[in-house]
Image (tube, rainbow, N blue to C red; front, side, top):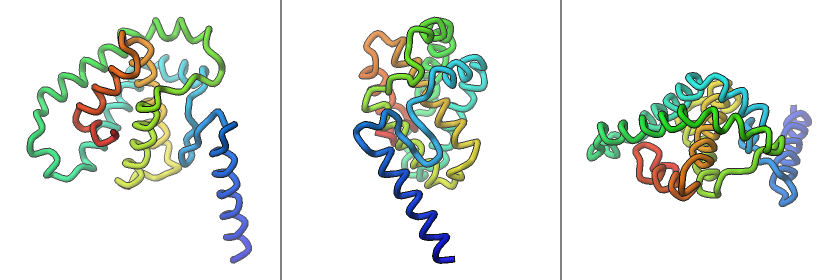
Length: 177
């Protein structure tokens, strides 16, 4: 049994070392690779309702993972209205982003640093909240959250900084900043 543990452990360490080198273009988070490929983003955008539902599920999981004391002063009406505006922005921008995909590389460019960090932190928060690391649910929420932020960043007048500001001032996403 020791030999197997050593083999699995060394394989995991090798995978971490390989993906953490400066030459690596992708980031591996558990079983999730970022940034997404053009094909994966196209697939996610083809079912916009599923994408938005996955992001809403991620948001709900972030809310449920927060202590009650964090929610005492939250204006849920305002927070929900802002979130609904972002969902509508993604829905309305879907066709524009799909038409631009053909001009992008197979491995999409990463999000701004702040947004990439938010996706990584979302993964960590979900894992801490009990979502299984290799689950399809985690992959679905994170891939769709990344796609959601990608669309927002590409279609916002001020790009990633405006989306980052919204994210960091919006409950429950503020925990990701």
